[in-house]
Amino acid sequence: MKKILLFVFLFFLTFLNTKADEVYLKNILIDGVSLKDFETLKTTYDLKYESTKESLNLAYDYDKNLYKGKGNTGEVKLNYGLNKLSFTLTSMDNEKTITYNLNITREDGRSNDNSLRSLTVASKKVNLTDSLEYEVLVDNSLKSVELTAVKNHEKAEFLNGYGERVGSNKITLSGEITKIEVKVKAENESIKTYVITIRKENYKSPDNTLKSLKINEINFKFSPNITEYNLNCDNSVDKININALTNYEKATIDYDRVVNLNVGLNEVNLLVTAEDGTTKTYKLNITRLEKEYLVKDIEITGVEFDFNPEVFDYEIETNLDTLDFKITLNKETVTSNILNNESLSNNSLVQIEIKEGEEVLIYNFKVIKEEIESDVTNQNNEDKNQENNFFKEYEMYIGIGVFFFGIFSMMVALLMMPKKSQIM
Image (cartoon, rainbow, N blue to C red):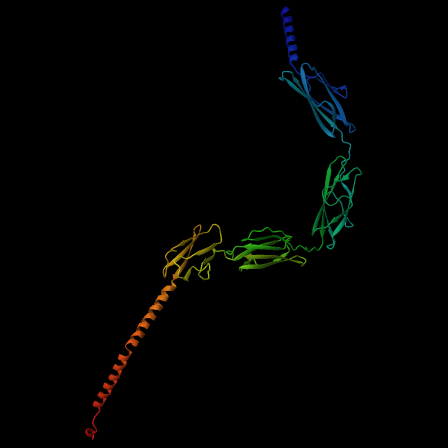
């Protein structure tokens, strides 16, 4: 018997120690009243309140010397529908914890009616069904229409900020199709969106704008509202390829897709015709620049000649021993070097080397010495003078010689004549 009593006593002590180690609440108070059916080890409770219950006050009973508590306490606002609240109890050594959950449902007695009672567009009453999308045909000439929407429930409301509408409102028509959204919010804040498509009958678009305009060889920023562009291109671009696209698919464009460019200003026009026949012209003023040479000009002090950057061989008449060049280059990256410009003689060849990167140009200047031609002329004159002096010095002797040569010739002629007697 004693053993049995000892066993029961030990079991009871063990049970007490186990309970002492558990972490638990003593009670949950809602608006100062103990929670019905509260149990220490029960951690989840489902509660319901009427829609008029906007808030409640929560309190938890536990030993604050042994545990720490954290969660929804005090005044708690209740939303419509399910509200999930919780409270966690933790031992001071943070080794043991327990969480109690309150699932509180506040009934929602508000109306969920977010429908339209009626809808009228351009004096046409729309037949409302369960659908949220409707199409209304209007005359092509209309620029705007009146939209009148009436909500079905008095506590519903129209939402602003979703487009050009709400209740009775004038709608501006743009193009063939104008889409309007009518949004209705119910008392319970649920939202329904009606999409109204207003379509013009027998519509012909006046859109004569370009959506895009590109030139493969020239980069520029295009805007449909800008109709004239001033563009430049390098001399190396002798033709351009143009690609244009209309903003409206039924509009047409008349233009040359490939254009040959002359040096200077080239005018290119693109004529866009809208579906309704109205037109718009986009104008491209394209300037093809002059060819840019490495050398702009070469001058020689005291020597006149015409420099052409495309001509590389020149003859220079001068008596100078050295040519004084003035070279004007087109770029800072271009360099020049003068070769063979010392002790110049007739037919000397002076060269100017022009270089930019790997490109090298050579301009040749052949020197023709004027003094050489003068010496030849003087020599000829001296020869003639010597010849004239010779004739002057021997003029008398030459005359006597010519005289006696004449007498001698006559005597020979007489002797050679036949006698008359002999002839007879």
